[in-house]
Image (cartoon, rainbow, N blue to C red; front, side, top):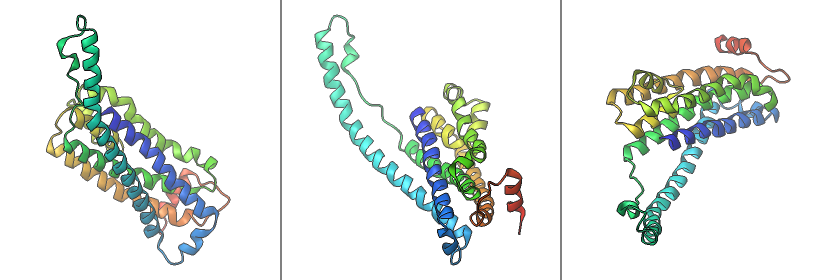
Length: 244
């Protein structure tokens, strides 16, 4: 659970930065002016987010296959190693010391990991894309990125309480918050069996959150990609969202 949570935590930053830099690069090179003449900003943003999401899933699939192969051979190798140690120190090592095996992981946990990674990525990438379209340089994006970064960091502060008592009211409430669920829900799934309504309820909330955020980000994107030489404030971003 901890490993899955930290992997998703790192992925949110890494792939979100890819989205943001891609938007900024197109904006500063004026390429987007040509693209926007034939493609709607919403379609362009969705294509960018979907493309990087598929990139992330492909990389995770390769890592998962490599990890599965390593785990298949790690158990026997460690058993041989620990068996030899047990023979050398038979007086001090318990009889079951040589019985070493890699714990099996429920396939449902893998499915949940991929699902929450994908939904979490879609939510945060839409926010990073909005930030990228509102600035010209990465140094100007620090202030706008701060709320997004805090949303990613906050669930890390609750990893231990959630893993210690995954069925508590606090753990259930935090893991169902769409911005925290990508990190906290896989941790709970690794410890206990999540009730049906909590799992699919969280998935539904994350989908609805993404739909709202991608709509808001697209409205920021359509204005921000054509503005140069000025860093937008939060008030201006809200104005862009409300403009027809």
